[in-house]
Length: 189
Image 1 (cartoon, rainbow, N blue to C red):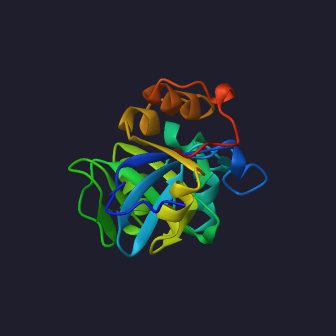
Image 2: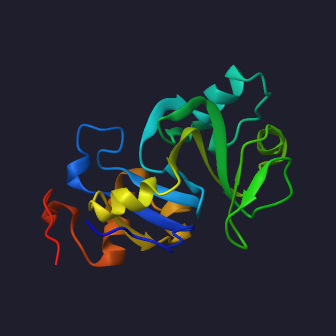
């Protein structure tokens, strides 16, 4: 088996292949916020929980003014630390604990961003998740070599503008592929 080395997939989508059925990543679309020699971190952006943003704010005792965001879904970002919240947003702003991904997009895990959302509606575009998807050093590269994932550079419109049920297919279209045509077996040249 060939190993994939020296690839940085920060700001890419991972598209789960059919071989990941019956796993937490079945039909998952993951946005990679960080990928380096130490591993990778991302959020599943197409698996909403049965929990609204307003309900989440009530649970963490943050007063929330009525706003369209209140009815938005909170997502299951992945199977790691599902009791911890993450806000994927643009613009990136200046928060206590943020990872700047691009010049526009950041991932924040500090509560100050939630207070700003509740009081000022900022940042303008957000996806809120509980938990994250994480891989140790070399783990994602091994999964890529095993054809568990397709990768494509991320399009922020898919994260922030495309309705949840359409996100996976929208990412597949970036590759020119229809998900229904994927096989759970792959050949190696």
